[in-house]
Structures are given as C-alpha cells and as structure tokens.
Length: 185
Image 1 (cartoon, helix red, strand yellow):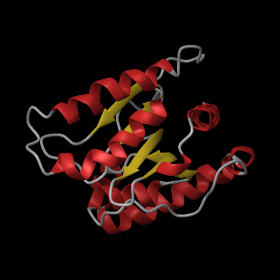
Image 2 (image 1 turned 120 degrees about the vertical axis):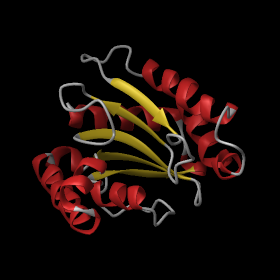
Image 3 (image 1 turned 90 degrees about the horizontal axis):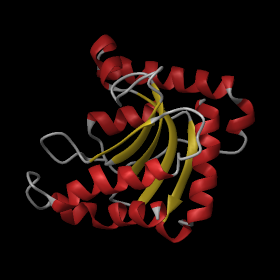
C-alpha cells in the first residue's frame, strides 16, 4: 500500500543515509517499488502521467520525493509544475504538494531571487485554483533541511497537505492524491 511505503521512507531514511549510496537496497526500494505502487493508483486516470521517486542522484538527497509529471508540462522535477510527495525524514512527515521545479528557476534567477520567484508563482497557482485550495492548505511547509533544493521546494509549494505518520491512512492518501491530480489536470 502506498501509505505504508511512504511511511517506511519517512521512518528509515535517516538511517539509510548513513550507509553508502551506491548499490543501496533502500534507494532501489524507493526508486522502483514506491514508484510502481504509486503508478498503480493511476490505473483509471484519464491521462498518462510519468511517476518518479528519488533519493538523490549520486548522493543522498536531503529530502526524498515521489512525483507525478504531466509530460505536456514537464517530465522532471527540475522545471515546470507537478504534484509531489515530499518526505521530511527529520520530523517523519510527508507532504503532498502542488509544487514547481527549482533547478531551472535557480539557473535563471540565482538562489535567493529564485526562491522569491517560486513563492510568487506558487501564489499564482493557488489563486488560479481556488476550489482545490479550499480542500488543502496554503500554509508553509517544513522539510527539515536548509539545503538549497529543499528551500526551493518550500518556496515552490503552492498548496497541499502534510501527514504525520500517525495520520497516514490509505483511503485518505488516495483521495487526497486524486483531488490533487485533478487540480493539476
């Protein structure tokens, strides 16, 4: 179940980061098993979304994630907007977020100004989707890291829902994901 897999990542990530990245069974679990389980949720979804889970490229990321990309908008977490589960391993929280690519904005505007651009665009997205925003929260999110990419994810967060491990429920996770994907569509 997706909720159980997300919980496992939130619970075990700090420990896994203490081990070598190359050849990590945990990293393979996230990249492959978690992504496959998430893709199952889209069986009856009317458009074909790309699903990707990441724990980093070459090194452990500060914040692991599971994202859903519409290929007409973007196929990666570096640009465009997308739906993502951001996992805060420090606080063991999982945030479902309407978010945007940080890397392309940082390249164009620099890190500091880029975060301001991301915040403005996040507000614009929320203003365009008031019916969906009412069902979620626009409060700032916490990811447990001061690294550049997580700060970009925080700035790029438009709206969403944060779950504590004790709040994880498969039915709620699925319903919220479908509602968020409807907003994305």
